[in-house]
Length: 167
Image 1 (cartoon, rainbow, N blue to C red):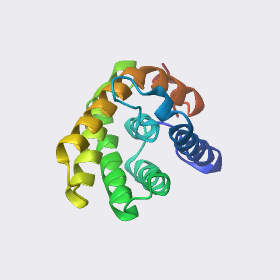
Image 2 (image 1 turned 45 degrees about the horizontal axis):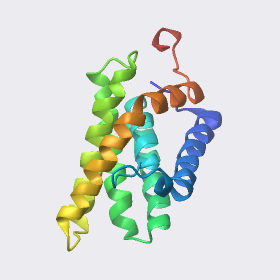
Image 3 (image 1 turned 180 degrees about the horizontal axis):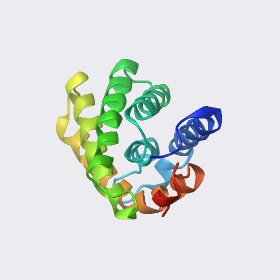
């Protein structure tokens, strides 16, 4: 489990979520490959959620949804609820996955992306569903390529609580 108690741990994960939102707004459109763009807030949320408790994951999902909605000027409630619930579900993956291996982040990225986009689409459907899902799947694949380095970075900023959990 990642360090989630105390102000120091809280400020670290809040800083990571805020940094991901800034990177999304500044660089994501410039890193477009074959029509797919990375989703830095979802990537950082997956890295945080897979290694922390459900309460911290839910708060990180809430903040991610709030910041993402403010950048996209979309329905705030739908983004907050989708990110919060998806992060809470992904936080339970640590029961079945070994957090010692960097590859554990890949199922977390896939599950978080599918849940977050699926719930967002159910709550606020768009007129063109095909384009929405193409963008969502492209973003998920892009994030899978960035997942292992991002997981390593998050584990360095938020080290494990116990030494036997270290990478």
